[in-house]
Image (tube, rainbow, N blue to C red; front, side):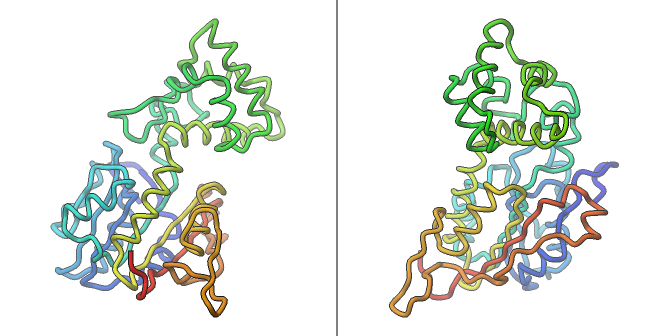
Length: 310
C-alpha cells in the first residue's frame, strides 16, 4: 500500500484476515496495529455510515496515515490498553471484531534511524514509541550479564546466549555500545557465514521484544479481547515468530497462555473461543513472491462463544 509517496507497509494476508473478521456493515471494529492503515482502510470500505473502527498505534509515524473519515477513531496508545480505551469510548463489550497484525512494518525495518535492522548503521533505538522508554543501547549498556543472557535465550532462542552476554558485558567496560556498527563489531565472532542473516535476525528480534515489552503487551491485549468483544465477535491475529504464535495458539484453544486445557463433563475442551479454522492459515506462494516479508506469517481466527461471560 502506498503511503506518503512510499511503501509504508504491505498488508499481509489482507483478504484472508478480512474474511476472518466476518465484517458486518454496521459493526464496530478495532485494528490494534494500525501502522500504514492498510487493513483499516479495507475494513472502512466494507462499513456503512453506522459502522465504526478504532485504530491503535503508539508510533508517531503512523499518525500521518490516519484516514480522513468520521467513522475512524485513532488511538495513540499501545494495544495493551485496549480495554481502557474501549471503556472510555463506551464500546467495551460491543466490538464485532479485533484485528492484530503483530509484525514490525516494512517502514520500521527500512528506516535506518530507528535501529530495527542490521542492514544499516545508526543508533540502537528499536522503540516503537520513540517518546518514552529504554532504547536497545540503554539495555545493552545497563543490563546485568544474567539479564542479557536471559533475553537472548528466551526471546532469540539462541544457544550461545550466555557467551554472547559475557562478551557484551566485557566489551562495554572499554567502550559503550551505542550504534548498530558497535553492536555488530562486538558479536562478530558468533556470526557464522552460513547462517549470518538468521543469527542476526534472532539477536535483533530478542532486543526488540525486550525494548518494547512485546510479550507482556501481547498477553495483556489478548486477555482484554474477552472484555471488549461481544458474543460471536471475531479475533483475527497474524503472528511472525514462534514465541508470539505459541501464545496466540494456546490462548485461542484453551483461554490461557500455557495451553492447559480444562474439560467439561463430556470431555470437551473448555475455552472462551471457538476456532473458526482449525488449521493455521499461511500466505500463498504468490503472496510470498510478491511480498517476501510475509513468508513467516501465520493467521489464526477465533470467535468468542455466546455463553462465555467475563
